[in-house]
Amino acid sequence: MSLFSRKPPDPRVLADPHRLPPGQVLTEKWPVLHYGPAAQYPDLDSWRLRVTGLASNPLSLRFDQLTALPNVDIHCDIHCVTTWSRLDNVFTGVRVRELLDRAGAQPQARFLVFRCARGFSTSIPREFADEDDVAVVWAHDGQPLAVEHGRPLRALVPKLYFWKSAKWLEEIVVAEHDELGFWERNGYNNSADPWREERYW
Image (cartoon, rainbow, N blue to C red):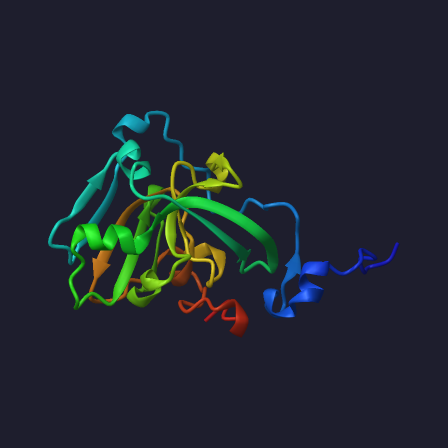
């Protein structure tokens, strides 16, 4: 058996080779990768998304309040640090900048810290929130997120390796200083740019 795939090149990548970062391989599936068991939320009535920190109007939103905010469909490719990429995803949610505007994020804030179930966290520079494709999302390709992919809510930062799109999101902290998250403290590169292969420290 050959060690190499005989599958023909994906025409989407042939048409635009800039869609596939170096060192990545395409998959049609969506692999499930996380540390420990998936977080479970049997009672969404008690779930909240909070926006805290350097915010003049901190938010605490029920799921129905969040989904009632202006929705967007975001078409994007996603790239995992473990070298798979999946093209042409559609996520539904609310842009992070919409939440920051409503929370009154203060101008000295330089970072956003995503805090999630089971003590997981990660962070991104504040300027990423100005991008149209940075959001909090609850649906993928028209269906609610599966538990193993972050239900009820995950971050979406598709320009970075996908661990920055944190699952089981519960809080966005608007912060002046950066805070290394779980994977960053365990050897992953905090910048996480797939095009520069910033996988590990």
